[in-house]
Structure formats: structure tokens, C-alpha cells
Image (tube, rainbow, N blue to C red; front, side, top):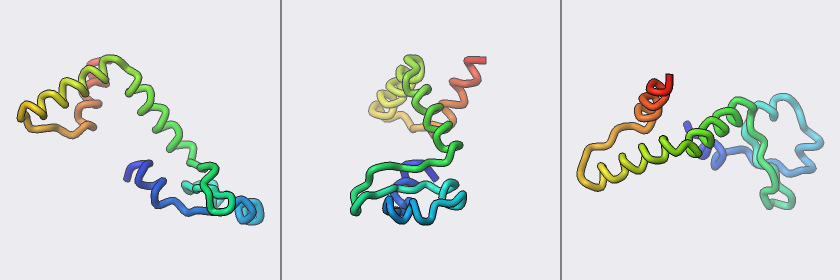
Length: 96
């Protein structure tokens, strides 16, 4: 499942409850921390943060952006798409 989907399904916990019940159990989960019901912060496991940083690095890479745009144009022209994971694997293989 994606981090975005996990975030939408994340347990919501108020600041007061977080202070009273903070434990390592909570630290391994995605949590949306609220203040009077309004989201103010998100707790993400370290591995998820590393994954997000990797994605942001890929999105900042001009070659990756060009490849994604090329794929979008091909799909608009009627080409059958391929999974993005295959595309990124191919890009990573070419970098080695």
C-alpha cells in the first residue's frame, strides 16, 4: 500500500492522548496528531520517511521528469502504458 493511502487511513490521536499514551507501539504506526480535532502533525515510521526522500529525489531528477513526460505523451498517443515501478527500475539500471 502507498504511504498516501496509509496516511488517509491513519489512526488519529489528540495531543493530550498522545502525551498520556505515548509508547513505542504508536511510534511504529502512521499517526495523524490532532489538536481539538484539527490535524497539526504526522508521525511516520523512519522507513516511510526514507522512502519519501527517495521519491522526492527521483522527482527532482531531470532525466526522470523527461522520461515520465515522454510516457505521458506516448499514452496520450494511444500507446499501452507500463507500471511506473518498471520504468524506475529501468532508469536505475541505466545509472549503474
